[in-house]
Image 1 (cartoon, rainbow, N blue to C red):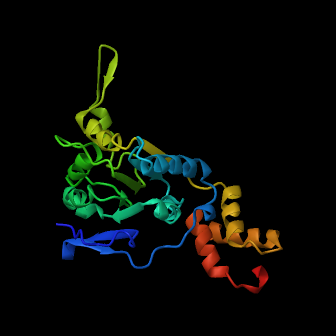
Image 2 (cartoon, rainbow, N blue to C red):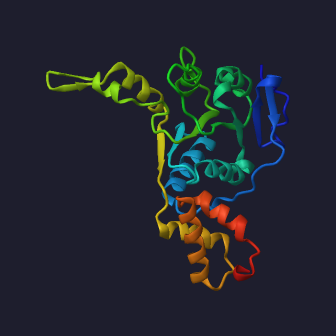
Image 3 (tube, one colour):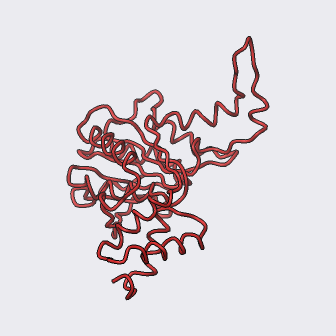
Length: 259
């Protein structure tokens, strides 16, 4: 069973640790701020609106943030906690392999006077895995409805969270002019469908990447030199995204050319 003795009044986030079968308070939170995330304004607006409705006790959705790696999905959840923790938002991070414990975790927090997000980072399932069944019950309930003070926010590189194979599409049939997806496709889609709000993330175009770099180097006067070096850095890595901008900052912060 989860440890429900945590002082949630002072603890904004916890993580489930399987070896101790309980929750451990997160000691060092990422300080990333909402306004520091650039290039994803549409996703930020939708996520903030849904979260504010949840905090207000209004109808709100579970959320799936899916798409290209390094584009700010996980950072957005961390910034969300920093923005709304004083309004009663709390987060519990649960690893995919621990989802079997999710019903017990939810049982222990459903009557508490806080609003909890169950955060599943980098969520996906391979063929034959069954951990998603516990997640389904928390997303939509079974005989018992899911608690009003709990929502699931997950990030994934996969839109449907499960592997999709060409053979599955080949097994689909057309009957009387209507397409009937194969059972495997129905199973793949059914889990993602339980997330009422799905936000997509794509690789940054160069202008957005440079905007993220500019946000990390606000005092630099020679923007041309900064941009040339940032483009060179991203080209060497073969990807432009928010993570690349952060890595560029870590490597060149304090460089005499950009100070």
